[in-house]
Length: 527
Image (cartoon, rainbow, N blue to C red; front, side, top):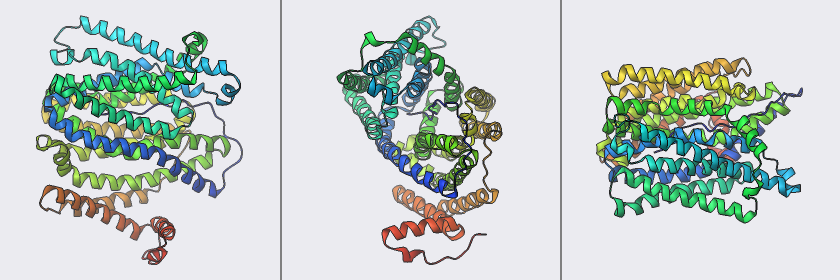
């Protein structure tokens, strides 16, 4: 029950230096990217493992309608949390100065106290306004099931704003292990909290939010206590000027974050309006599984690649940055095509295995959603020029335009073709978003990807998916495992046969493992 949403990172004004990186720069930075991404990937795998544990539990505990309501309330919470943070989590990254804080304890206390209590203040104000507005809205806008969750949403938006700030502290201090450990712990505590609440409040959406609220309160309290023990949180050290500067810096990024949320989650409102709670539950499972699949690709990259290409831009210039991002995008597309192929052949059985038979219809939506999300993920590379030039306002407007495309398609098609309309709208709007972002960014940083590489990846993926889809075994678990194994093996095997870069990479891996002789066969030399 998570949304795929981009965390905005502030971009300082940079000017490329005259020096241009050597050919070895790209390889060195790729290794650095892989090393740093591996830290975040470990945490992500931990959280995803817990997600694959919790999904079968929650989809079987709650009805389809309740699961849809939980997801719908979660999207409202996501939107309100973005507003309540007022961009301060980005300001925390921008105004951190570890060297100055080491020499000036008072400056350190002022920074941490201002950011933490400022986040508490802004989120509390949004929570109060939210409660006040919802109390005067008619029941035709907020029905009884949703109204019962509004109190939880108000409390959780404060907790999540504080949690985002506390995680920003860990990230800016480069405590990557702590960052990932707490991410996994938070996920685990929420699962335990929800399960612990079941005997007391029954199998309903309120139970999920009751357990989640208690769990997230515990996590925030522990992290805040650790800061208190360090002696850096004092209400008396709150600095009004720093808080104001933080608002001025972070607030413009809110539009970008809100536009991203509307693009990613706006269809839930329309599905609930046109089709009802049960179809929303089916769509929520399909989108959630597709998002988890895509998260394996996007999150480690999103966290690690930004500081690398910013440093390259600053120290080596545009040519080295373009070469690095173009190579990364090419490798990403190679991996993404394989992921799409595997998702296409495993969606039907995977949904039934993880979420139960009552969500079987979600399997037909997943391939389209996975492809759409993978296409959207390429914005990490294709919008780099806009980020470097601090064109976040332009990015926000383009995301908003893409969200409008999605909402219009849903309004026109949902009453006519059902849930397939939302999956199709996701694919079309994400593709549209990436195209217009790439066009706008190309003026600042033109990336180059050989068209023949993309065609090769797509053709190989289609061949692998076709072979995997033709396989039919019993029972379901065996068929699922066999399809995934066959599809992945064919995709990797054909890549090895047709792509000299893959063979060279495999040679290094086999050499490291002491089996270099496996790579002596070279059937095709790529032109």
